[in-house]
Each structure stands twice: as C-alpha cells, then as structure tokens.
Length: 393
Image (cartoon, rainbow, N blue to C red):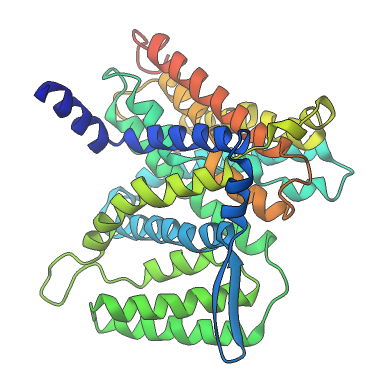
C-alpha cells in the first residue's frame, strides 16, 4: 500500500502531472457540457460576479474572470520565468537564444499562413489567424516527459525555451491585434502604477503587498484601457526584483509559490471553463468550415512544419547547433508536440470570436482534435521511432 502511495505522490509532484490534470479537466468539461449537468455548467460560467465603488463598476461573467483575471497570473509567471532566464539562466548566453527563438518564429508564421490561405476572402473568419500559433507548454512537456529516458534533457530545455518565446509572441499578438477601443485615462492610471513599481524596483523594496496593490491597479486599468488585461501580468513581472537588499532570492520565491496554484487551480480551471464544447450543435458543415480546417491544419501540420523547418535551416546554415545529445529525428518529434495548442489556442479563439458559439463550437473542437492528434503522434514518434538514431540523422 505504501508503494502505491509513493508512486502516486511521485506522479503528482512530477512535471508531467500538470498536463495529465489538464486532460482530466478537459474530459470532465466535455462530459458535463454534453450531459444532464450542461445547464448548471453554463449557468456557472455565465454567473455575474463583480463590485462597484461609486460610479466605477466591474461586473463580469465568471468565465471572463477566469480568462481575464486568473490567466493574467499565468502570464505573470511567464514574465518571472523570462526575466530569470535572461538575467541568471540560459538566455544570458545569446547562443542559447537563437534556436528556440527561430523555432518559435517559424511556429508562429507558418500556422498563421496556413490559416490565412484557407480563409482568405472572409474578413470575419480571418480574425482567428493567430489561433493555431500557440503552444500549450504543460501539455507538450507532459507528453515529452512520458516518452522515456532516451530523450535528452536538452530537448526539454529547448521546448521550455521555445514555449517562452511562443508565449511572448502570443502576448504581442494580443496587444497589437486584439485590442479594442482605447481609454486614455485608463492608460494614464496604468502608467502611474508602472512608475510606482519602477521606483520600488530601483530601491529594491521587497514588500509583496506593495507589488500586489500596484498589480491590481495596473490590471484594472489595463482591463479598462481596451488592451487585454493579461498584459498587466507580464508587465508586473518585469518589475519584481531578483533579490532582496540582503541578497536573498525574491523573484524565485514568488515564482515557486505560484507553481502549485498554476498546476492545480488556475490552468485546470481554465481548461474546465473553456473546453466544454457543445457537440450537439456541430454538423458536417461547421466541422469542415474554413475556420475549423484552418485551425486543424495550422496546429497539426503548420506548427510542426514551421518549428522544424526554421530550426533545421538555422542549424544547416550554422546559425546555431542541435540541442546537446539530440538528433534531428528527436527535434522533429518535439516539433510535433508544439501543435498542442489547447489552453492558449482556446484563449486566443475567445478573443478572436467573442461570441463563443458563432461557429457552433466547431472552432473549439478543431483545437481539441488538433491538440489530441499532435500529442498522440508526437508521443508515438518520440517513443518508438527515435531510439537508435545517430546524432544529426
């Protein structure tokens, strides 16, 4: 019995568990949405929650609190990781940046071109061009960890680094292409909050409550500005000091304290809230519509093609090297896994098409199917076809 509990504890504490939990939440959401609890599920997501102070009011459905609020904490964690990598991690050496940066660039451009080519001529549908450009790090990493010890650790580092640049790309896309009517007053308030955090950083003040208050003000002002609120998360992260005045870790402690909430609460709740595809309204016309085909081909074909092709030519022209101890077959296998868009693709889909059932959920279904195919094919390829390859083959 102790052996069973030990194995269960090891699984829960492993990096792969986050992806497994997301799979469970996805299946549960599909079950609830398409079962007798569907009305309760929709009522739960549409429940208005908010507050008002004088004339100021913030009142949103619970789904938007998840997609605008909780997911900002996810982007905050990405910002912390990015800052740590540039100041004290692998990204201090420019050589370590080249391959994941070029791979991420290919993984954004090629899927976007796939989607655009398929949907050219339909201006509304084209709003979703960025949906297949995203990668779900937790899912992809979980599959990679399941593939066995013959996969070198350098490929895990490559995938994580690529995912960071991929997420930065998503943030820029959201800021530039999915911004609504702008509010100058809200921008001024956001600027004041940023300036205060800048001063706190300069003097290395490490009272967490100060940063928390500033981040809340920044989040609300960015939300009201017309720019997507998730940007507040990554902006806040850039102003968190690396250490205290005494030299003790500060940023790292915050990042570590967030891991539990990200793995067990925020991302699972996001998956549960967004993966509930209503299968009853989906027909062949919507399944084979331009948006569905564009998403599927963009994620499953375009993503792996873009990541691998850009990586291959960067290595071939000696701009960079293969990850240590790996070969091209293994690199291609990791490229397949980047087609697991899932949470980030669902998130961008919600921004592109604000009415969730405009395509009768066929767009969401295409994301799930493409992510599933990428995960299964990536696992099979890495597990069974990359064992005895020599380096560079």
